[in-house]
Length: 545
Image (cartoon, rainbow, N blue to C red; front, side):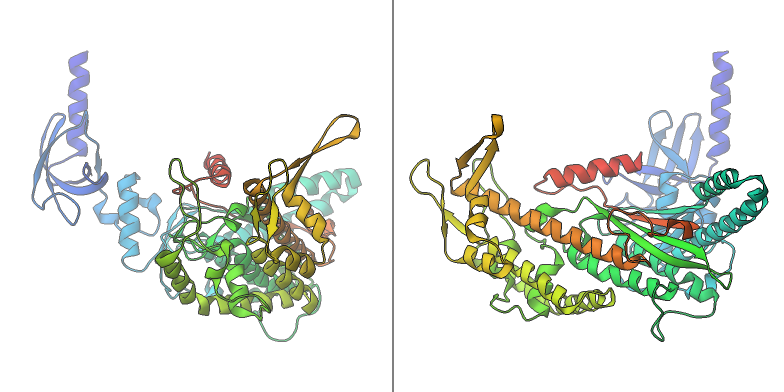
């Protein structure tokens, strides 16, 4: 019996690995796959000749492989670079990587794997197809592009909504309760979702913008219209479309930052819900939207590493607007200087000397882009209904955070609270209309509740006061970010009342279908990791599962 099984295995091996066939073998030095040609098959043993290449074995080098220990995978040579990887005979890791690379070198960054779209960031602008060429077309796996999946989701949404209407009419005779149940059942099945995921710098933010742009303009394209033109009437599909587009530069300025791997890395996760309904002309139109954000990396506000920057908005403020009494050089402010990585037995501090000059030079190189970013963000706020006084308030608070983070403390006698140095705290209190004594107490004392309504007041030394100051700066930035999202949602709700808590417009009966777009971080591991990285990685792990 054992001999029969062994003979059967040998036959399978010989059928799968014929002499002259190409296979993928593991290249142990670089832990990647390399291509080889089968020269001889002797039972479980193969002799192969490596194709070679940069970083791989020498071209023509022969290797002896044992199928009991070495990984050998057949190569689909005829299907290299195919637009849909499910067409591969052997759908395995090396075949997938090779197929993606074959398309990448030809400036084809997109590849389908069924209805999963894989994008390899080309890190350059590549002319894409016109959106209009996808309108009304069936999904084509041989034409991979985000527009194709967007069109597929839109058609499914519209079809399910039409079916819901027919079902509601048919159920009308059976009573309102049964009609409501049938509508609810269809509604649960028709909603669509995009999950956009990948490592830092993979292009998640840009892909999310492509998806949102297509879906928000889809109805207008079918009707023969497009973005732009005359001012849209309040609450119309084109007005909502314009506001959805305007929300992007606002969120990018306040929630994105430059990192070592990505000049425009999203430092928060978001879900954008696009709500649709059938229009008077029969088209399925955008009637509202809602943004939900979570896991803002607020630790970046007071601490970032060398090669990274704080959130874009701080640099845009200094480069793009009249900052008044503020120094426009980013290197002046503690918040905008990277922290020195702490060594064992030591603490973190500010960069100085040549390192600070280098950081300042890098900031200057980014100043043209920062000016453009401020102009785009300010224009978007105007499009979303933010008036001049509100924008001036944002400038005041942002400038105050820069000054507040520079407030220094000095120790006094033991048991007494630290003292505030300089006039920074007075300037912040005056600008923000706060009581200076109350603001000072927040950072110099900790109030602990006790029994019977009593409290203990603990005086803080300079180090603890500095930690309390940083916590206050992070808290204020988080609240400012949340207020902006609330403002965006009020503007994106056609009735102007949904706010941050609602997940759909304030007239929920008008919604016949929703497409949600999730844009979330990749896994992160920095030289110094904190609670933010733990939460990001836990959330990412749950998503992958």
